[in-house]
Image (tube, rainbow, N blue to C red; front, side, top):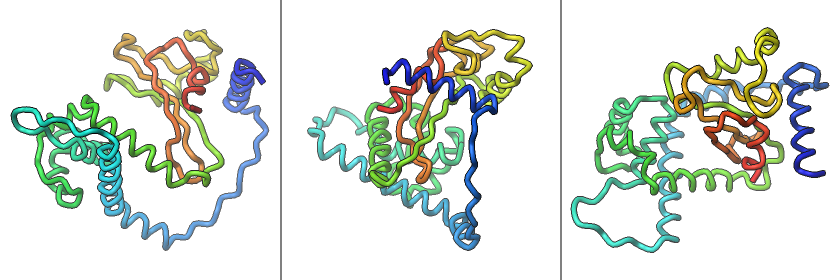
Length: 244
């Protein structure tokens, strides 16, 4: 089937699901082992710190093994990008602002294997460093290696990252999905209404960066992601990039 036909078929399916017309038999809810559940909840944060340290160290090791060493420049050596990556991931896990993240560095530096302190300003600029992003990308590869050939079913969905605290993606999506709103307002994107991302109130440069990602149903690991600031496209337009 041509790619265009597959896309149209997918859009039709999405519309049926959102309209409640798709014939779907839900799975039976599995029984919960509460002893395992309690144990996982109790040890979750400690396990996360251990996994975080080991994953970043492994990613950093792989990158160094395949990258020729760079000549040391004059002046104080820069903060190790692996250390910054560890704090950025801890910050994301705890949903902490930059200053609190610096406090977490004080608290967990030994546990994470970080031996040099750095300020919240370094954390704030962390994603601007290419070496840090390379480590984060390598971590995605490593985590997916652990479930290679074990994950058979994937779920894909779209979301948005707001560039302003005044914008809330979930609220905009809920408003967009209401039948009343759909009747009142025509679609502002190039595709059909059911395929559109919600539109921000603010200017384009301060609205949402739209994102589509795929997640393994069993192991819950992200398998692919596409991000775009283009407000004229729909979710399914970004699907091919996620599949790759």
